[in-house]
Length: 252
Image (cartoon, rainbow, N blue to C red; front, side):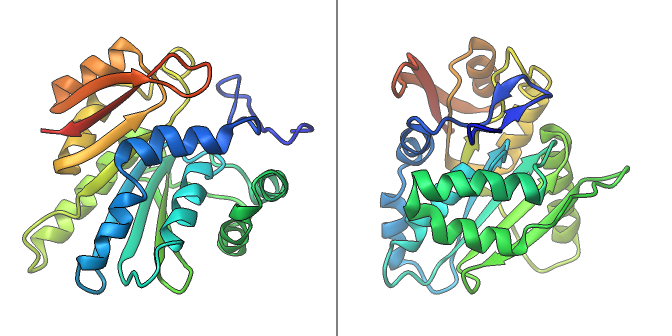
């Protein structure tokens, strides 16, 4: 942590790099999912329309902060961004404060988003033994909602799906609240094989609608094949910087 780049003891890898980390997020996750152009197109939608983005591997929240920053740049937008992320090993508030000190120095445009999240971020998370802990945050006067699920990625998203299905059975709504885009950003399959499983990919598909987009920094064959099997059309494209290839796709 001395360098400002926190290290995961569980996966023996860094969460992000101050050398191009923001640009990588913009390229891999925003650009490949069509953002912020898709945000701007929402000006034609009715008030209180909700755009939903899901993420596996919240980590330091960098992807969320960059997405929130671009969302807030769109003028006259009455829609709501609902961002749902699942994280098994959340950072403490003290760790986040240390990380965000680095963020604010390196990427000052993220300062307001860092401060807004830190104001509500708990000192620690206490996941339930039996089910996922879902923590909800209302940011920027309700313009952005953050749902942070503390659990294993597959279990956490299955819990989200079952919660929605249960709610559907007891309401007048006729559809699940499916995602418009996915950011898959857990540590690489070589370091975190438990996350990149076919059960996760199938759950992602169930929480997606036709046309839901998906992108990930990894280009591993097991990920590409698993997402194809789950119902996504996947492609490889050139990655950012030294990363040779990344994956992007769309729900069929």
